[in-house]
Amino acid sequence: MAKIRERNRELIIRAASKVFAEQGFAAAKTVDIGELAGVPKANIYYYFKTKQNLYSSVLESVIEPLLAASDPFMSTMTPGCPDGVYPCQGKNFPAAAVCV
Image 1 (cartoon, one colour):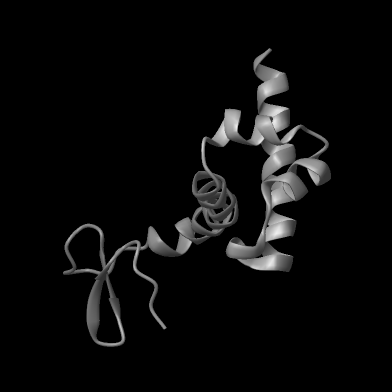
Image 2 (tube, rainbow, N blue to C red; image 1 turned 90 degrees about the horizontal axis):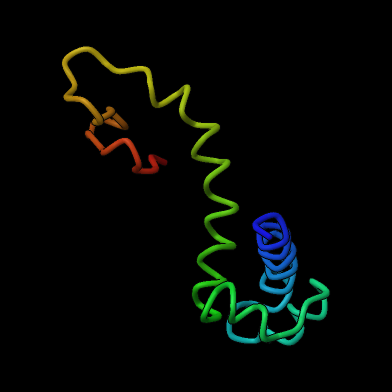
């Protein structure tokens, strides 16, 4: 049962990623996401409760691999910097900050 739940969530997130990318959050319709995922619209609300929650899950599915890939760079501490603070262009930022 848990495998079906995980598979459905993944199908919905993949479909939602495509629909949100093509149409944007406001124009995206959950019925379109459900059709693309091959699940009823009601399943989207069963798994995610709201369109905003689904959008947040889509963003997490994109961001988490990027953060994981950055771990080797962030784990190199600079001498004299407090734990979790890294120098960036002369300023100190928390580890999760994006420096440009």
